Image (cartoon, rainbow, N blue to C red):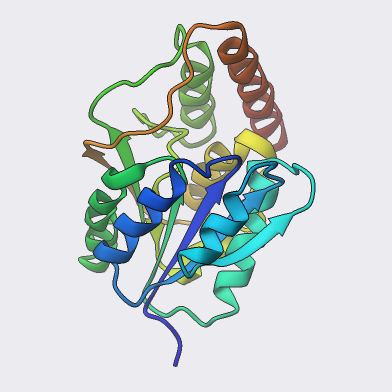
Amino acid sequence: MPPEIGIVVTARNEADCLPQTLAALARAFPGASVVVADDGSSDATPDVARDAGADVVRSERPVGKGGAATRGAERLLATGVERAVLLCDGDLGASAAQLVRLVEAVDAGESDLAVASFARRIGGGFGIAVGFARWAVARRTGLELSAPISGQRAMRPEVLRAVLPFAPGFGMETGMTIDAHRAGYRLVEIELDLEHRGTGRTAAGFAHRARQLADFARVYASRR
């Protein structure tokens, strides 16, 4: 029997946070089909996911978030999921239980694509990358969003099919938003008190955001 709700969790080297995330999702969405899209992790992420009962789609080497999530979403759609699909990151921990609100918004017809915005800022740099993503989405769609790159999203299965394949790398969410809007789907942002692994103002953090910015720019150029 096809599952009513399907969940794709993207993860790379999240063996420490993933057990709490998957446990929270299991409590919030009993009976849901869960696929962990592992982007070439070098730690125990795939083993942790399997131990929690998730289906694992593993890339042997890193292919980027968009590539890994596309494979996970395709695996999930093959199960025939009927009601709603939730996309989320593997580092949310216990706060993942709050994502119920996104599915509720889709079920109630409030939106075709419900996106979580974080109630509290965790980590981050000077806002250049996310600011560019906001500008890019506004230029391509007219939408003024607070969380254009949030990876926590719920939608109906037909919406997911319409936005696949995802844009490569960190451009996944920006591209998804533009593609969904152009296909005529309605988007709403919902503020949730979520937690995640933040990147600070360190060399590694700035390098991460530079990669994000480059991916956002590629999405913007490709969606003229």
